[in-house]
Amino acid sequence: MTNSQTLAYRLRKLILISGIVFTIAGIIWAVLPFFNEFFKEKFDFEFVGLVSTVLVINPVVGDSELLYGINLLVILGLLLLGQWAFLRPGKGWTKRMLTVGKPLRSSVIAAGVVAMLLTTGLIALLLELPNWWQEIVNADNTWGTFGIFASMLAIWGIWTWIFFVYWRQGDRYTQLGKMIRGLVAGSILETIIAVPVHIWATRQRECYCCRGTYTTLILAATVLIWVFGPGIVLLYMREKYRQAKLISICPNCGCDLQNMKDADSNECPQCNKDTP
Image (tube, rainbow, N blue to C red; front, side, top):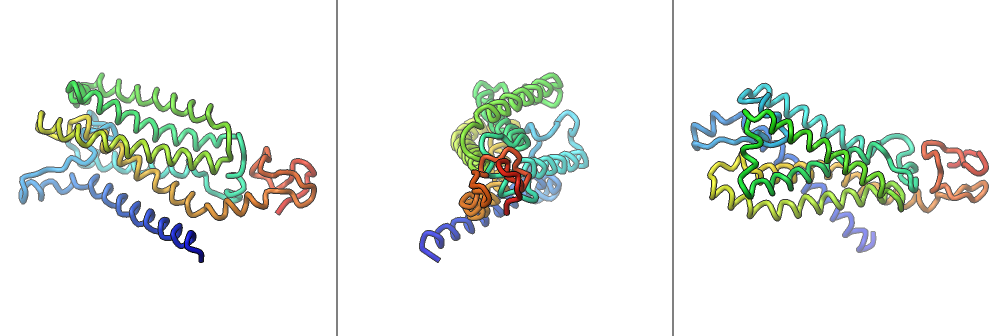
């Protein structure tokens, strides 16, 4: 194993360990509200988890631990479903990743959802500055909650359209990697901006949970947890992708199979013969 291969292996291992630790920490933070009686009695402190953020339908959940738990399970299921939709694993996955100029619709839709979460976090941060966010997300403000979710739906549509339109050059593997890097960069940048603003907002207005910056931090962390799964898969599949790219020539007629119209077929579009 060369020095570069050793470094790449260690880097992948570090990313894997960091991602697992970060994911576990996020899950723990989300479930801590179930133990608030203990924390209240021992430390006079309560955890809110995801309450007061857009990941929880606050007017419906209210103070119910059961409804909060159901909400958590739904969020977890949607995150896992989004990861599956982004990668669409299955037979011939490596070959499908070589397709050029043909967007994978499920990937575009899933990436649009995650980009929407980052955009919502940025909006929450901006609305926190004039102290408008708390009034909008107030459990009694049904119209405010409706407005937030309607805006999120519109933002999702815009990002999906952007990803679909600009999926022009490069194969699917390359485009998915660009999306992952962009989402990671956006979530880190958003966190760096939100932390000092959150400290300022908390000092000015006491409670941290209803601050727009808290929503920003939770959404940025959610995005980082989400991209960890697809990111580590693409990282570990890199060598297989390179090998598949090197042999993407039909042995029968010499056609470039990287531009195959039907990526799920083993048949060469030029000579109509099976390819390995």
